[in-house]
Length: 561
Image 1 (cartoon, rainbow, N blue to C red):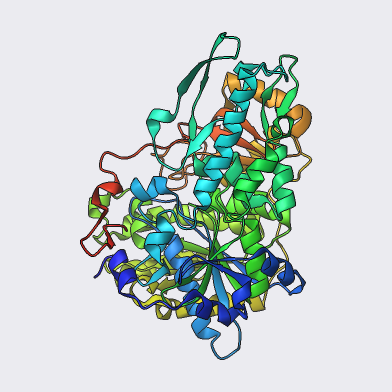
Image 2 (cartoon, one colour):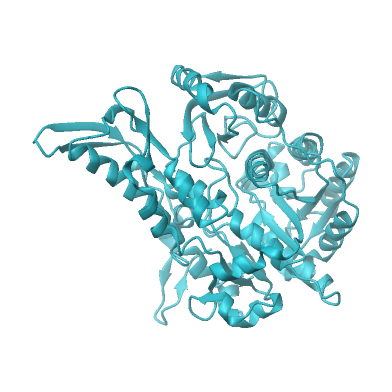
């Protein structure tokens, strides 16, 4: 089997203007970035507002494992399959997903454009720099950081308490050495000052969250202005607007704010825009891309990062809460290999048939199904992302057990066969949208206290017995409850477990969710709840993926997967 990059580079791609014609887009609706990538113009987005919306399909997954689940690959394969099924109905489906971050591309995970014969392309460009959106977000974030320190240098007219500053710099790279830094400088009078701060990865920046939740440029600028960077010496909030930062930050983001249009290997259209992490941010592509996709296509297939306890919960309780979006169906991706891992099998033995471990690992799948159906009122279908090592007996057991949970499990072979390998899944999704239920609900109301919101997620979604707050988190909570108790919460925790301990597999119960820190994302409109050992600046593994990436004599990138 060819590698992902070999498959992508061997494909014959269509000019983006030809791809976009399927959506009745004209050349003036696009801002080309070469022949294969374009941004949708602001005028195009505006004129589409009168169109009716298509139907939104959410793809999520079981808790991630080293075996891989293939959520993005399934998102793409399902879209290609839908377009095959819809070919004679004059209807279209399109992908709406996040942009990859250079951190995982060069780190442990590698690229994030799908795999096998279900990819968005050109995969090298999308994975590396793309249209520069993330660089613009980093620049806007760091402009604000520079303005803060510059203001203090020039006399600190606002009376900012340097020790209270919470705004951190960011870079789109896994660089653990930057987690904590000391700023040492002088003001214009020669007085020295020193403060502790650090870097977050760009996808954890509040600017990224704002970028992905804003609906218009005006909304973007207003949200940027509402960012709280610290407190005055009188304990009053200092906002980005107090530094007159929001205008220049918006100027840096103006072009980036326009969604990126690319294609799949089978020439389905795809909007790839924005990219907050789901384990440390809210894990969904931009609102503006999702909304314009719904105007362009009859079916929009979008994904939410990592397992359904993270991405899907935040998709619903943050993105849907703020926008009114509602998915009509959820595809929950699982693999036999990953479920055996949740049943206790180590990675080296996952290709061996093990019905006992598979049945044990089904607890993870069941918990995700129960959460989506009971707590969010959503219709669910399980997509079994097929591996050659899956035995017939294992597939049969997985389908039988899933049926006992009241849900269908459909074998999908899109990785090997493209859209043709997910036709059954596409047909089931269409059937679900034709018989929708109106039971959609949020997990908690806006009005309950922040502590209750955290406890509700911990107990209902994670199966925890209770939460445990550090002294720092307790003190911050008291202050946040005064003015921001109506905000939703964004839990930052490990993606590998329902708990805050990445080593707890399956569906553990009775565990304690340990809350280390709370952060106010005032412009984004939520509270970040940092749990366990999760870091907002990840590190690289001992052998990062970057070691295998290079450029050959023909000028082609190799080793990127």
